Length: 217
Image (tube, rainbow, N blue to C red; front, side):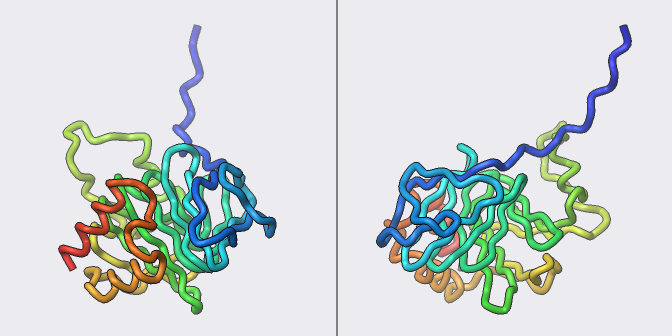
């Protein structure tokens, strides 16, 4: 019996974020209501912080750390940062306008300024920002036979960001600038969203990623 060909492999659904830890008080909210540890925010809901910060677990696969005075909205395949900053370690995507921010073995920090511009800082691994259904999104279901690095988007529509680099994007995800993370940028990043590495998620990989960029800056 003939069988219909299999359809394209779809990206993993992004369904929820679990509150794992509250830092500096209880000013963490899900859809405007005070959140508690182990509470789950689902697609379509908003997580917001005041003077507090929150450690999150995205779909049991990626660690997140939402900074003070920050807001994210959860979607089906990504989250959107409406305000503030979020640190992520693991395979969790964000959306910048109509663009997708994807990662490869990455620890990154995404910050949104009052003027709406995004700063995408990669601490470890590699990140990219490209069109939905673009080159990198289509590569998800394929692997390199040699295990080597992918050459990159031949169309030039994707921006790649390597470890210890920072790239800036407009609210619509359009590229603005890119460069090496400086020592002052690093220190501002750490001091703005934490009161020291002891407040970061209890992950050696995250602390090592910060230390690596400190040494390189």
